[in-house]
Image (tube, rainbow, N blue to C red; front, side):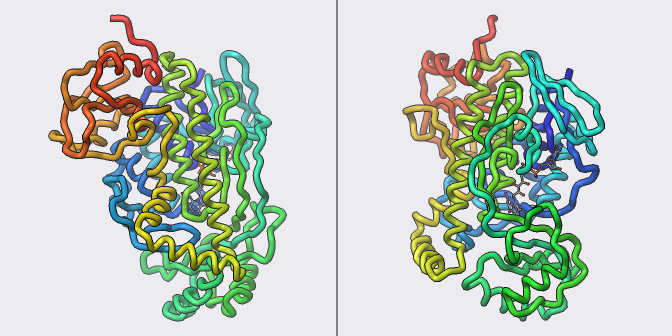
Length: 478
Ligand SMILES: Cc1cc2nc3c(=O)[nH]c(=O)nc-3n(C[C@H](O)[C@H](O)[C@H](O)COP(=O)(O)OP(=O)(O)OC[C@H]3O[C@@H](n4cnc5c(N)ncnc54)[C@H](O)[C@@H]3O)c2cc1C
């Protein structure tokens, strides 16, 4: 029997597969499409995802194919300078098209030993005490101990579980495509700048290297009954003319799609042996570019917990902490995209609100706060009362011998001990003990979970021993 079947080989499923394989979990990814679509929805990684890639030794691969960007705010289409003193050693985003992110995560998952089967659509599931039976469209049946639905916004797994997906349906729809333009680039830029004063869901941005290709977005006339049906070039032209008075001479589309602003969240991220992650668990408009990022972050939270269950050392409640921690994060992202959509409206009230909000974002503190929301570096899980670091992910710090994040590639827990008097005896098979010092860290020791969130701060061995079981289970008998 397979340990974990991951339904869906998008960024969330591929990230999860890699995380599970770090712990030797027998992992099978089932992806319904026979080939990657090549369509770039997500445009890049925000700081928290950049940190994650660094924590797993993947950052160099991303840096080799991505431009860094430092755009502050990124809220409601209001662009501001990058704020000072953001709490991260990775104070930038990476412009990485989604297909590239998927390729890199796919490569990593395979290198680590995950099996990825394309052309396999999950259509049924049944769970019992020992595992889950997964049915494929061709009638084949597979058995696994756990199943994770990473199968996108229209998740079949979520539907089969009967998990509610409350929220709002789409009220507006936007057309998106990559195509060639005959219009002079300077004219295109001037028209976009003018239209953007009142309509934020409009743009034509150069993509690719010298191919004259543009990524074009424009509001649709209404909300299509079937969002899966691609718009035609004619529909695109019509909407461009209606919005901007010109269609820029668009032609030769590479791909065309449409997206809405439906905002919904799964009521539960876990039902027994089946879990949901990424767009399967939450959908929202792409404002601020957060969806792929929080999907990857869901996977980062879930991977080690599920591996602990499979390995048999998970303390009670560890797997349920996935919902407890990630559901509120998802809910807050939904809230911020609702706020952004209101700010992006084209009516005079929204325009006035946008101007006011833009002025507020000129205050460094506000810009930093908003950037912390969008980049997800501000996320703090509720681990109870305690030190200010508790529940936050720890930023990378320079140590006497290297950097903190270089020590986290294995996906194990980590005790960073600046006094050299502590011990993880009993948990050494799950937690690394590093004695080193950093000028950037003014606590004596921190215990980090495999996802880099701070589980304990202190200097007392007995206190540490009291906290280790909460995340790492019972001590091994020596
Ligand atoms: C226009 C647009 C722009 C965006 N820009 C950004 C951005 O800049 N930054 C950002 O972070 N996010 C952005 N997003 C959101 C981002 O694209 C999604 O959040 C992200 O793709 C979610 O990843 P996922 O792996 O959870 O789901 P998906 O990418 O949807 O992957 C799900 C996979 O599951 C497969 N699948 C579906 N059903 C089944 C089944 N029954 N069996 C097997 N496989 C199945 C699908 O084929 C797919 O490959 C944008 C979205 C849109 C629409």
